[in-house]
Image 1 (cartoon, rainbow, N blue to C red):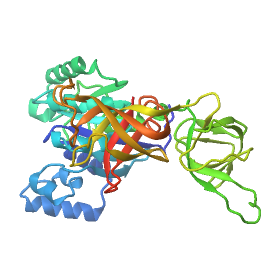
Image 2 (cartoon, rainbow, N blue to C red):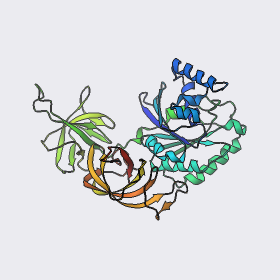
Image 3 (cartoon, rainbow, N blue to C red):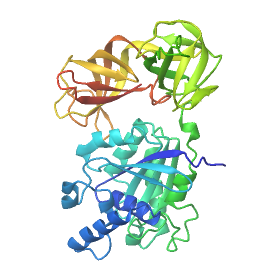
Length: 418
């Protein structure tokens, strides 16, 4: 299987406090030689000040002063690194229950989630919670890293019993691809280099797994969706009659000559030409940014969507959504918000809370309909004009939305269309 060397893989880390998420990322960066010399010197000095004998690898990601002082991760830390085979963006998300919203924002664009399990404690409530959120966000690939194997004498028996515990629970989740790797982030076993202490493990180390994971099929190539961001009218010589609709292909493929429909008006036309940053193209696919020129003059503006004539999203004003509340202030009953979906902005109202997820038991609560920070609820939203939506499970770009408070202009919630 040929891997595209420019392909970008986004992954998120999740796990309980002190499971070693930041140490694992530090080890990945350190062993793959992705750290600059000045960063290295600064972290060596900080490690000495703290009285550590070696380098505290967690300091590569825990950048906030509070994080360093308390030894915990508070905010989502993004790190970029590259190997000859792939580019990576890591979202290091906090493990604490009060930071559920941080995990949701860090994981919403991820191709893969690394869930850390402490080999001494096995699958705990927090592990189940993170696996559930990964399933809710439809992250296509989950890698369960069983960490701190050095503290259980690299025992194969312990590793197998944790796999059994996780599989019993995960059979109810909607995750297509789950893999298990025994590691020691502190010592570097099975992170970048194969472990000599666990010869019984025949699989690949973590970095090799990330480099060779097949992610091309993660993008929806079937449903062609092009949210229009702006209309281009250059009005200069050679382009007097040019009218291009610029935006980013959310999913699927568009080709010159394709018959398309414009949502929400429903008018049909044919693609006359497609222009990219470096000139004309015969086709455009996700996630390319292009300008589409149509055969007919149709009234199209920002927020409209160009789709295939025979494959259209649902135009809906009443939408059922899984909503994660992000703001300190609770949701106000029947308050008006601005809803942002692709390039479309409308006014909206939370019409009804159907149930709330108890993030500890993963059960449904139907006796408490208040929404506070970090709560995840199934709600009905009513919008002033129709939105062109797909279910989040099928299309993460056209199935996600955010709510903005008009008074403060702050994002208060993130939602996934059911």
